[in-house]
Image (cartoon, rainbow, N blue to C red; front, side, top):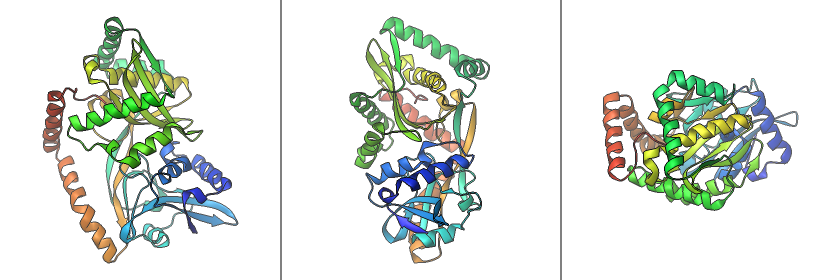
Length: 361
């Protein structure tokens, strides 16, 4: 095994990564491709990749970020929605052996993919990651919504029609390339974070730089997709995500609060599902997290995990002290529905007071 910077991967190694991922049987999530790791490395210098070799062929890849005291974390932790290693079938190093080979005292994750052979048995809290299956086409999905969420669908479509009458003709662009539209989305999202009392991710330069970089990326396994809903030629809702050939990972949705009464974020997601199906995408991954709109839109769920794996020693103990108490406090609240519901209601009230609408993306 060798440790390299993502930019040091040769073309044949990048291709081997793609082929291994394709043979894994797991969803073709763009966060698990080499392109995403290389994009994060462009804005975060401590990204590394462990590469396994057999008979001169690369047979495994484990991307990670290495911080002080050997504290490791998943690539893009905090924004990446799918994490883990990409390994040949049968290759399953033990978690602690993997950390030792990488010189890590701990490795932290918050969206570890289910079925990761290198991390079987690692303790972690499980979370549902809702998905929309449009593999049978958008018409079949809409038929399902009429049964599963009839009031939601009827209301959302009616608001879309009213939007067209009162504001202007509604137009949807699935893959908008204008950087100005991306800046508008990021401004909306930053304002939304502040309005709802959440941490503004775009205040971190590495995250905003990563999104700009990915917007320009056009690779089969990982392309940035900016979708915009216009009314009367004015952008009123937008979403930035990543796509592979078959999966669209939903990432950063937001909307202009001036048009909140029309539920533009919900209309946007229906049009995204329609366009994705037309583009040959079978699954939209909405990402982990409770939200009313996800419950209304989803057709199923995947499972992801949050936690960490450590090696015995002082450095691992320091990692535990600096991370685990906070994580457990959050887990305590999440696992008590009444307490979690009160927190969500408080945030929703705050959003309404500041001009937003609760339960929308």
